[in-house]
Image (cartoon, rainbow, N blue to C red; front, side, top):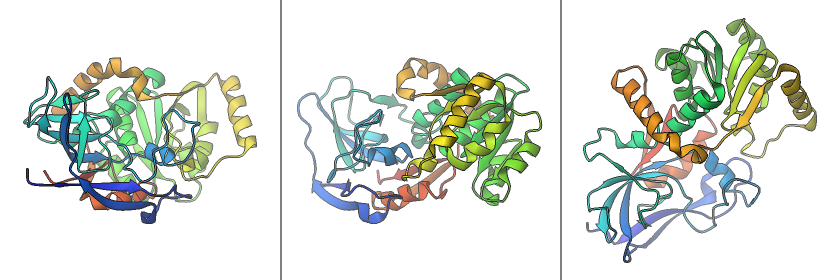
Length: 340
């Protein structure tokens, strides 16, 4: 290893609305030096996820603290151990980090690292379909959605990292799956590549009417990733005893919120229809991760599940790629690839 600098992307101001490149700055720092019991990691893949937008706000009203200014945001990475002063890890080991961050190199004490096979064909999948993204889709659908064969599942952001997996798992468990995504091209991909029964473009007119046609028997499970107008179109179609895993509310991450009247109507419908509405964090359920990994690997190896990735090359492109998340530029998991 001949590098002497650690390139980082710093968050230099809190985004106002949608994030823009000027909210970030590329900074070079001296290469960090591990101390006793620590590892020097070289990040190979960086996960970009919508939840990061909330942590860029200066708010303590969240499940995670805000990112500091003038420092790299956190984020999961696939990394290689380039120097080890910690027991249990050797130089060359491939690992997944929970918070390697928007930078080329990181220091770790080994806590939370998950070792990957040296010969893993697509290590980036450990951030997506075989990582926290896939686990989020699998746990939310199976534990909260509790799908039964013959039921109707609707998935918002169906072309995204979580939605594309949730819909495929629903299909494998016997559901009729209707996706909602942005654009006719993405909807075609959701049907043709991910195997959904139908997909509706939320940008086209009369989403509510088209959804009634696509789900004539109502909706038994709604996997919520978006909120806003999409939720409003789905909600009247929920059947009695419907289940709604709430994974995210991306429509409000850039500062757009719903009025009190719509929230009141939503809460009243929970009573009338006995709907189960439950938010969740994958970090609370990591004891289920081995079961998830075993089942997902089986489906992948059998060719029953597709793992689509949008890979962007170069750490310098992370800010623009991140902003594109909220405009639907990615399909499947969004990953930044760094040189090995």
